[in-house]
Amino acid sequence: MAEGKVEDKLCFRTSAGLRNALLKKEISAKELVDESYKRIDEVDDKLKAFISLTRESAYKTAEEVDQRIKINAELPPLAGIPIAIKDNMCMQGCKTTAGSKILENFLSPYNATVVKRLEENLIPIIGKANLDEFAMGSSTENSAFNVTGNPWNPKTVPGGSSGGSAVAVSAGETVISLGSDTGGSIRLPASFCGVVGMKPTYGRISRFGLIAFASSLDQIGPMARNVEDTALLLQAVSGHDPMDSTSIDRPVPDYTATLKEDIKGLRIGVIAEMLGEGINPEVKDAVNASIKMYEELGAKIEEVSIPHTKYAIATYYVVAMAEASSNLARFDGVKFGYRAPDTDSLMEMYTKTRAEGFGDEVKRRIMLGTYALSSGYYDAYYKKAQQVRTLIKKDFDRAFEQVDLLLSPVCPTTAFDIGSKTDDPLSMYLMDICTLMVNLAGLPGISVPCGYDSKGLPIGLQLIGPVLSEELMLRAAYNFEQATDFHKKHPQI
Image (cartoon, rainbow, N blue to C red; front, side):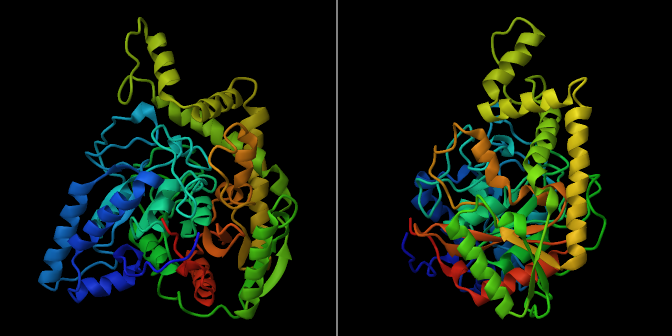
């Protein structure tokens, strides 16, 4: 779709630009929230990025920001900047559905830690974004409520499972958003929608209040239209949380402090297995052009191998489905969520509730995961997958002895047509081939726009770093972004 001038719309500005306007009293935080809801009214009937809107909370936060500006009080960097959050993060008193009928009317009794941190930073939460049911999918077609469309072409998917979060940012409905990433669920939608999306190191951001899919893989992360906004949002929600036993107890650095330093001498490894067979030629061309750009910026490029890549899909799906089977056992119609009516026994209530409440993809994963964990098969599947996972992590450890960061495509293709892969689950699972190893190894990864295909659909470049290397990764992404114009384009809706 053609590029257009939308910079006059408030929600297409950077958070730094909006902050300056707020502090100079050229605009108010209430006007920013108004603009978000106005934009949602304009485009969301076509895109379906949101499951629910949280107007009362958003305006309450905006009012507090405006009051503080009035008395020249100090403000956090993202105060007043509208955000969308994926609807698998609990927000007290609001619906949290995880995109599933089984939680259609569930009101969360508490706040997720990330929601608490957004509130502490005075960031107005505009609404809850659509997702594949329980974050299980790569296209945001598995939601029980709506299929979300890609702003660059609403007939194509936005990627998944954080499709609504990516669309909200790409379409200018909000300035920033939060997604969750279990096997690529932030980076894939970021790539398909032409925005920046980051999966931080496992444990960098608290998972308390995130509805679990696969607990050893899930991680919340930021999405934005540029790297600086991504860094600011990461800063706002990161940090140790005693409510999450997997949370890393390490100080949170200032992610913008070294953002603008150059990357001369940075060693970047190109993952050989991810630029071979099965990668769309246009994606390959865009990634190769990005490699040349990094060379021009002074980085040293070399090819590296992750030998166990060929086992990654099988390893990931055994681990993820086994953990999903365990985590989703709590949805039984007893304590919360949907309960099937007119049942005569406890077993019938369990069976009918799950049959009616879960979608096809969720049922498929529960059944496969339950089988992998069953007596006599645990060692052959889940234990073996965890052993191969260790080998994949060691592959990355060896690679980072040679280089500082790794580079690859985010996805083998650009956005595909809605409905084109729904009857072929394996083809859908292969969409995550470039991203899911990052989750298996607990590493940080980021997607930045690096081009467009012949249909005008965005292409993402993935950078992967060692544990807790977010500062370096963001700096490398920022240098690339500033040397190119891809992040300046916006979809016309």
